[in-house]
Image 1 (cartoon, helix red, strand yellow):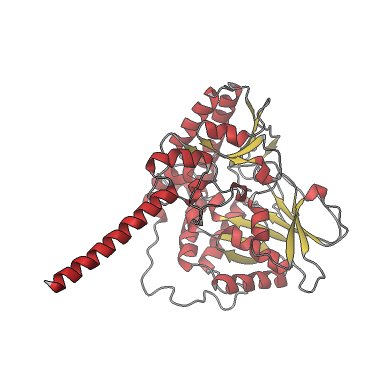
Image 2 (tube, rainbow, N blue to C red; image 1 turned 60 degrees about the vertical axis):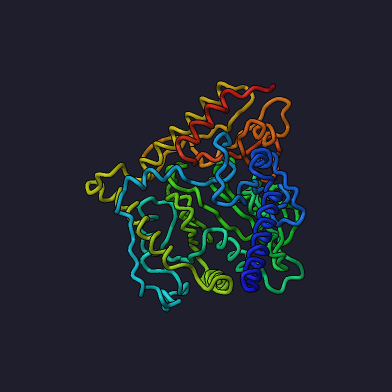
Length: 439
């Protein structure tokens, strides 16, 4: 009886602990009955919760939700560029992109000990080179290729690689506004003594060394970009994540910059693979980038590289060996048509509603496809016209989550909206946008 009493006592303690934990979680999350309100207005009353972050960090609360808690159906989340638009195409490819990895494979840290970037899988490097030659968007000859866990890690690596080690003050990092909202956050995240965020490149007046980030096509507004500061002491980093023929005409000759960054997520849509690559002219810069990645993550997942290599190979095959594919169109033809349709659908919705406006893009002939077309970016840079100064807040009242222009160094009358969600989400968004009223 005494033993049973002890056991029951233990169960009681465990039960109380579990219930206390559930109550605390419900308090922190606001409970299901408050969930919708909290998502829309970014409230969190749990003072000790690490999720009580400032909205100025530009991440919507939905980014922190437990994966088991889906957003309510009536909320349309277009804050993040999650490229789920591409899912349907890759489903049509069936088993062509399937990769089977034996359990004994990839035991070693090393991929190619003769390569400066020794964790770069040769199969992935070959697939990247082939794709660039097919599309004609970047020079790969006489370049060092560095692979990273997404372009975010590569961006950190290149800042480390090009910053002077013994300078009297951190080198300034600038980008012309509107700039990618994560640039200031990533630059300042480590509080490095090597570099610091210095804001809009157009306002940079110091006669000192600097790093300029040139994003083309630009995130968020989709415009083609060139360097702005243009001084002798500058170091240029070209972020070409969106320089693919579904988004913008490819120019001739191919891009030939000192440092060029690309990512799998924007080219194929496989954001979850977390893989990017840099094409670098200077050996020492590539060597220091490799050193940064080794010190931070001891290389990059071989499984991700092998999967990405297979996907990139199939992308190229759909164009170069089109007769062997009965599953669907060549990748870039399909993606171009889908982006063109979505932009037309969005422009039609905006035409019906005088509360909003979109930028216009100049036409250009694509050296890859031969088409003449205007850019159709992965994001829309939407402006609220009239007296609405907080466009993000206004759309949030209508259950559309976007990212305010203030996070991109611009007016809060603008918001960035992803064009890449699943079809049903995009259809729901354009329908709702066209019907919004000012009242």
